[in-house]
Image (tube, rainbow, N blue to C red; front, side, top):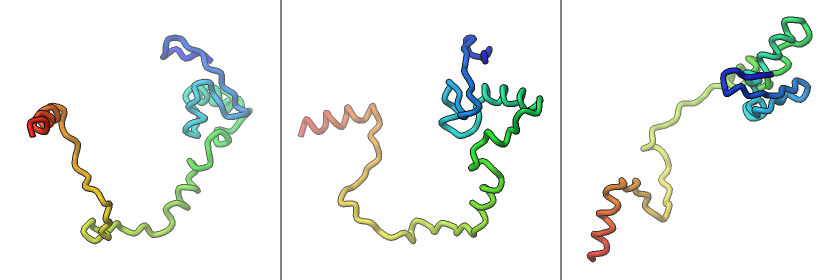
Length: 108
């Protein structure tokens, strides 16, 4: 399959193993644009069903299972238990101020 949107690159789509050489299908579990184009042609000819190429986590039934239980609201952070981290975490120093602070440290 040739992708005309990106420098005329070619990608190989393997529908049996759910792979494309762009690697997007493998990484996110959904067919990439290249695979979708090919699968749409096959589906139009009644050779395949699109649902067979999408990971089960993207099914509506999975979504319903994920949200069927009550999701409790998160409490305000003043109700969280206090944790002693044994150190103080300060915000990062802006680039311009870092040099000024280093010079002040060197003077001491």
